[in-house]
Figure 1 (spheres, helix red, strand yellow):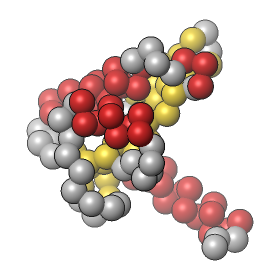
Figure 2: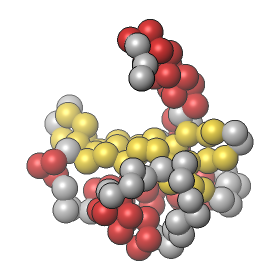
Figure 3: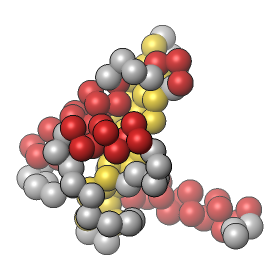
Figure 4: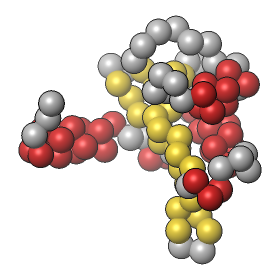
Length: 107
């Protein structure tokens, strides 16, 4: 339902919310193959997104990055972190459940 201008504004807004010190990437040569961002929305910290290149899935890279983000946030005194997961994204649901997250509702 957005036009191009609205979409670009939403992207710009999203990038202002990223906490770069708690967001991580894994590279192979100079190519990003996995990443996780931490954003703040209404004063709450969320891991959004976790993304892994299809050819690197199943190697634990997403888990590694989420754990690194959680460690970084804990060291900064953040004791509550949410995750944004698209309904039906079973691999992400499994990842976050394995790390102790509990579903509390929709975004």
